[in-house]
Length: 342
Ligand code: Q9C
Ligand code: ZN
Image (cartoon, rainbow, N blue to C red; front, top):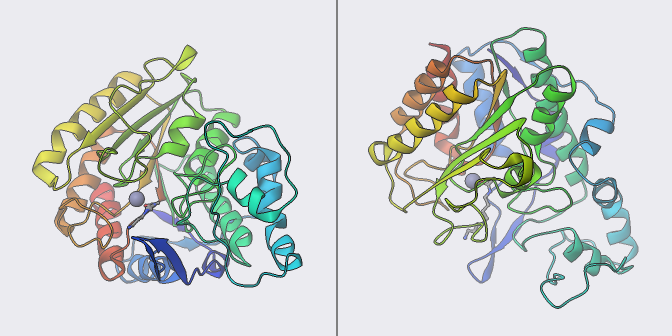
């Protein structure tokens, strides 16, 4: 299986994040990608290639152009406002506030285009996020060229980012951009299976009214875990997309044995839907020692996950999402890829 990765993705290097009432060391760090890359090399997963530079258009197929423009121009505006540290939003246009104002102030813009205060924006964030999206697009192209699988070593991750907002360490929704690209270049039905520990709210919302992109997600119950406000079992799609979204919220403490019934159900949906390709939003944060998560996967369970996904029998694009136990991240990720490759 080919892996796509670019060093440019390492340029987004947040120092701190706001969590648990304090500024803590950031967990979505460049060493995550370096660790996975190392393991892809040492375990000989396959060739490692650099992404192509794609035009802006595939990004605009998923995200609002004004949002992409905001990300692109952000750092210059931040500097012009006299700021120099990495940025955090802290005010949002929630219920009772106006949604329709084009504000000037950078703090207003940060709130307008974000969902949380846990996702720092820095000097190189846009550059890295764009390289991450190009990585997903390049891997998607391998599928269009007839490969049975490909691995997009994306970082920063993407599944929390929506049409016009960043959050949850995500800026551009790599999996969604890849799925839309596969649609635009000839495939009719795409399934996205999101196995990151957190619900992929951005991806779900982007395709909620569409039958041509099935969204399936297995994750920690949002009543008890980020992103809290989406990812419940009664969210099943709307309009033409009714029935084409499925969520399996699972309790904290879920291990492989209590996870498999949900995975089997998701695989049954895949069987019925018969996608032309599957995009796996591959988070490794279900791992027992993940520092911010509450599931109990062992490293071997990631091999089982890969083996199970292989049995689905469709061309599969793996797009990396979360996973913060850096020491085990390479092992867990490559376990999935090897389990799949057999
Ligand atoms: N006290 C992904 O896995 N909240 N994003 C963490 C920790 C944000 C995770 C709070 C978690 C976002 C792609
Ligand atoms: Zn996650």
